[in-house]
Amino acid sequence: MISPSTIFLLLLFLLGYIGKNQSIMIAVYVLLGIKLFRLDDRVFPYLSEKGISLGVTIITIAVLVPIASGQIGFKDLLESVKSYYGWIALGAGIFVALIAKNGLDLLANDPHLTTALVLGTIIAVVFFQGVAVGPLIGAGIAYVVMKFVDIFVGS
Image (cartoon, rainbow, N blue to C red; front, top):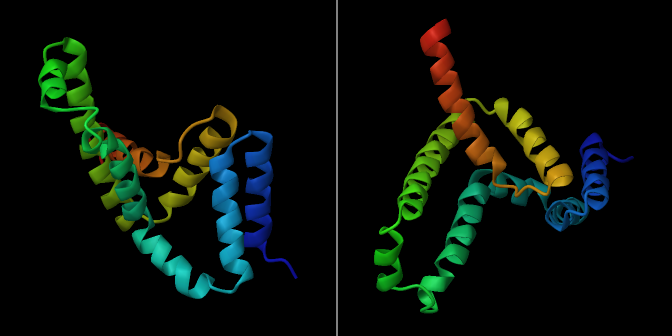
């Protein structure tokens, strides 16, 4: 008997295929493989607890490769802050990192919101060729909006 979670994953794979999104198809393929080999009881809790941190680390490594390879140096850093685009990028980097921090707190304290955030991310990845960093940033944005709403509506 196929479990509802397996059917859901197969549906996501199909959506990934229709949307031509290789990342979602690989993610589903890996998760189905883990389930197939009955490693889910050991691997899923680890991925659930450490997966976002591992993903952020891999993204950070990828972003730092141009520095490590010498393509970007101190001269480039100094040049970047000479333009207003550079200052906008600097501010955006700070803003997104702070929002992501609040997103981690929100996901830890209100895990039921993860379902809606993941659904939003899947929709964006499958249909709009988005990138699956959405749950963390989405949670951060949701946190900021919730706090803003609380100020005006009260809770």
